[in-house]
Amino acid sequence: MKTVKIEHGRRFLALVPHRDARLLLRAWSSELFAGGAAGAWHFPWVAPLAALDRAPSREDICAMARALRQSLPPGKKFECGGPVLAGISLADAEEQVFVYGPALDLGDVLPWDGFPGTTAIRPTALGCALMDGPAPSGLPAPPALSFGAAALAVIKARAISGCEPSGCHPAGWHALRWKIGALAWLPRRG
Image 1: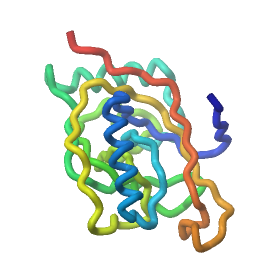
Image 2: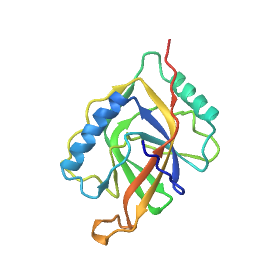
Image 3: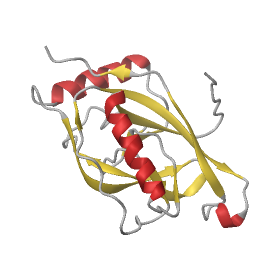
C-alpha cells in the first residue's frame, strides 16, 4: 500500500463508519458523479465533525470515542437522513467548500465540543462529494443507512493546485488529497 505524505493541510476530527456502511456510501458517491454532479470532487466516506488547530493525542481521541458511545442510548445506531451540505475550509483554499452527503444526527452535546483548538462542523454530513456551492438538482437520493460500528480518526486534507482553469475550483485547485489517521473504534455496548 502506498503511503501519501501530506506536508500541509487542514486537520479534521472525523467519524469513520464501518466498512459495510462505507461501501453503500461509495456506491452512492459513484451514482452522484455518474448523474452529473458538476463542480464536485471526491471526498472520503467519513463525516468531518470538527476542524482542528492541532491534532489531539491518541488518548484524547480514544476518550472522545468512549464518550460518544456513552452519549448514545443503549442499542441506538447512527441514523442517516436526507442529503445536506456541511461547510468546511481547507488550508490551501481560503474559500469555503461543502461536504455533501447524508445528514448524520449526533445530538447537541458532543465530546469534542470545548476541546482546545476545535471548531465544530454543523450540520454533520457523511461525505460523498466535495462541492463549491449548492448541490445541483436531480441528484439521486442517498441510501437508507444506519450503522452501529464506527471509529473516530484525524483526517488531514489539502487541495491540490496547478491545473487548467477550465477544470479547476475557482480558488485554483482541482482535487483533494487526504490521509486518515489511526482509528479509535467506539467501544461495543455490552
